[in-house]
Image (cartoon, rainbow, N blue to C red; front, top):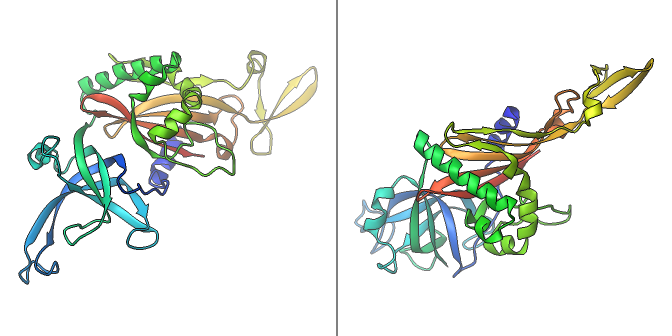
Length: 315
């Protein structure tokens, strides 16, 4: 699975194009930053006398793709607007500057010279994302992961839903089966509600991963594609890639390599990544182009709580 992770990291930014509607209440993920722009009277140059305007922005993990000011416009940042001081203020978010956060609020589109991004967010809440760097943070994540697994086993939709940040970054390929002609979509709250049973069925094997919070370890779960009888045989490679044979009663039997179903996880860059997919069988290893594929589910600590924030599929 190590080669899969290298491949996945290279393509994890190949995400589904998406743009929220105006006046839509949404959650967005990214880094909280500040920028200074020229303001009145001309909104052109601070050096030439325009007022300096400093605002807070969310530098998005996953850029939006909209058609607001131009066709297929990339929107890498969203300007944050503070409307209701009873909810959140500049002072509230100041400690999170230059850190990863998750924000919620209502969208609006660019309307005036004081707006510096095509999409803006009328801010309701800001939650800081904590990296799982210390043993205690990792223990906390794994203890909560066990509760997530229990919700999967019990098929408790309401409990399971609390572990998701909607919309989940990426696409829905790792959450339920798709037909070839079906367009990929975001896993929004509405999509989750509509497909909850399929989501639980698709993720069920994640509940089989052995988790040890005290040791901060996860053990891979592997379903061997070979029957017990097949596992007892001695196999030898043929001259053809991906082909093997065994001998029995003086006869030679040829087989193709095969893929096991696997699930596991690891800590990576402050996040917890679980994977579910296929890998080459140990005795009859299938070719990598057929076996090295998986969906990856990325969990982070948000205000101390385990949350599934993104997913991508490779292979």
